[in-house]
Amino acid sequence: MNVHFTHPQRGDVFKADVDPQCTGTAAVKGLVDSGFLEQPGKDGYDLSLSRTGAPVGPNATLASCGVQEGEVINVLRRGSGA
Image 1 (spheres, rainbow, N blue to C red):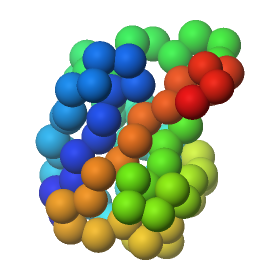
Image 2: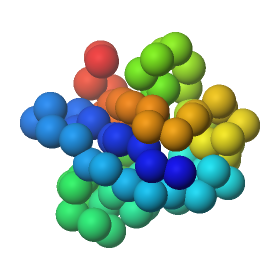
Image 3: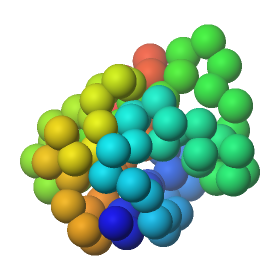
């Protein structure tokens, strides 16, 4: 399914075709590997479904969190207060 990840600081968007069984950890790793996100350092990143504000946990799949085709997923840097 196609989803859109927002950058935690720049405000730009990364469009990705992901498997619904992708976990939050795997999604963040893919975003880092692609160069969209910097290495997380000690704090790391959290994901949140823009439509509902529901978190996408590290071990939860996108499907289990209710992510649907075309959704926007916010990437938040842990400890940023966002």
